[in-house]
Length: 107
Image (cartoon, rainbow, N blue to C red; front, side, top):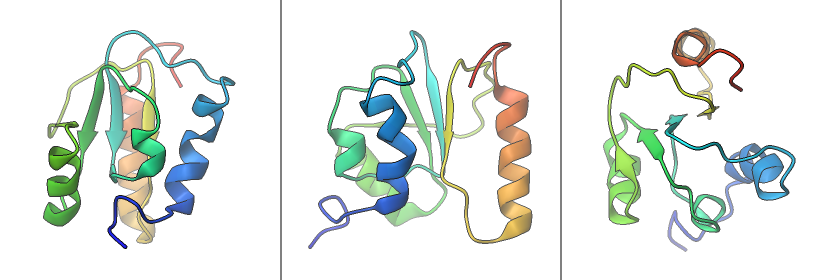
């Protein structure tokens, strides 16, 4: 089973409120830190999605699926998605970075 078709519980959970319409997909760009490609990400059109992934195999999968990859987007973004890593210090740094890139009133 490939990484794209495999079930990714964290990705499914992150996108659930958007897929169920409890959070609207905003106009403009949406930043996805530590993005991973998966069925949940590909299920719906995600216009303006900007993915960031430093792990090359995951970045290659995202590129192959047609997602935009960039590094160091300045923002501000109305919505930021984040799949935190297991390392606590890296997760904290990513959360701080996400907060700094968030538009006023953003999520």
